[in-house]
Image (cartoon, rainbow, N blue to C red; front, side, top):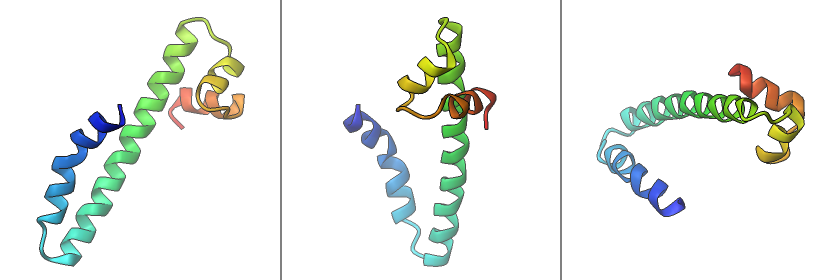
Length: 80
C-alpha cells in the first residue's frame, strides 16, 4: 500500500521539484497541502460514515480509526 501510495504521489513530487522559482514552489507546496487536507477530511468522513453504516458504534469506529476518542470519530463523521 505504501509503495503504491508513494508511486501515486511521484508525479506531484516531480511537478513541485520542477518549479525552479523557489517562492513559486513554496506557494505550490502550500496549495498542495491545502488540497491534501481537504482530501484527508473527506476520506476520514467517508470512512467514519461507512463504518457507522456497517452498524458499528462510535467507540468501535474510534478504535478502528487508530484509537481516537469516540467524540473525535463522531467529528470525523461530521466532516470536522
